[in-house]
Length: 444
Image (cartoon, rainbow, N blue to C red; front, side):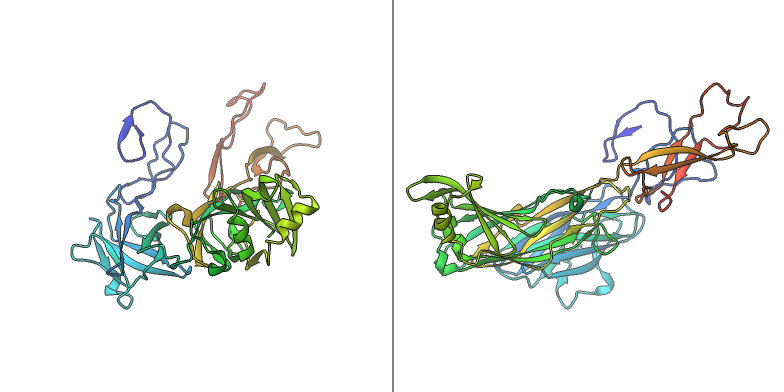
């Protein structure tokens, strides 16, 4: 019976199938009596997902109330839910609460974390106490333990009070766009942007009153994990834009600019519609790399007069401090994975709102396997077998289609069905020892 992914039958069709595994607190599988017609089906049976329905702030009370979505299937045991809260400075705190099978919440062992959290009567929501005014927070389910549940680890952004920005100087609103990267990005010879930050100046923006603008880009694991043996090296980088660049942005017809942060650590500051005295409106870009600045007008190197005019507005340029995230190129077949970057530590009357405060990077897996089948034993020097001999050994492996190096099915076993053909008749001239091969993680 086909399903629509939500526990509701979407239609019935005839299929060939084998039960290879079942997961989830609501299922039972008798492994001593497998049912099969000879063909395997993909194992996509998992328990319910714990995810956030809403996160609502109350600036007067200094609270954020978090509600969770109803589980698609009721677990048969209580679930420990790990809720992560990241404040405007990038500091992360994780609280553990208990979700009962009926969906109500309880404190884990009565722990309020010093009054930082509470659960109202009825257990319908989690309240985070003592949050700051005029600050953006990021909330997510970092983990779920019990009942075969899984966490939806996407962040929900919630603004407490106004967006800040001070008084009298105007604000610059920043929005983050994180670009997807291939797993072999470090070796592909292409210097692509990892991040693009777009800034929009308010009509009353005061360049000299606000001074330099700075913010921090901080990464958090999603399906991709960080670390030496992980999918990527995490990054926490502070970015500072000199007020001279903000003066350049003030000359934009739309009061906007973009900043591209490249994978090699260089940056590109662009004003798409700058009014250059005596020359009209043009796109001006400045590329900063190892202390040097290259100026481009409409995508071409600027002549000396225009370069001198633009350079007079550069000041101390763009300063980066701290590591950028870097993808680890491995030989694991793991599919595309992702991590999240958030904008924190804003200064210089910089603010951010909603979806612009964070974005997700997808690491595109470049390990697409080729199945390699070869006879590795039981043949004579001429590469032939003879009647009555010991079995012939057939080796099946997963390899990189370009390098022919072994690949590892990191996310679970891969089962292959072998078909034997040719002039020889199966069952008469030869009898296969097995027709099914399973490659386990770590074997390749």
